[in-house]
Length: 188
Image (tube, rainbow, N blue to C red; front, top):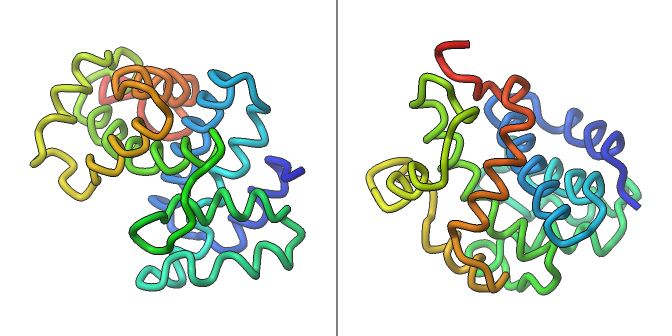
């Protein structure tokens, strides 16, 4: 099984840009919270989250085209590689998310970007961010405009969950690591 340590080793070798590392952590912590929600292995889901954009820095215009074989060659299990690949469903490939892990990754990738943007605007960052405040920003299509809300909603539908519930889980997962991901706010 992919460990968190191994995921960090692999990702650190491929990703050097701070904003991409922070994004990987945001996704990892949201994935850990989703794993906890589903009664799954938190660190395993976090490890998959860490590696989800493994090839993005080197190949931003060919994202996920340089992920599968290198990760398999590095000893990452095929089911974990499939989960990583599935977050590009209907955009970059046709690997449909089937498991709760895959559906969660598909959903939280874009969702964490909106949560991060929302938290960065607050004096106390994510520490006091409530779902109600998040939802106001989520509904504002001009806010964090590059984050695809339709994909988030599609993922929530796949999970059979309401966006408010998924957001609450992800916010809580990210909040626990607010200092590490730079979301303590301007008062910190």
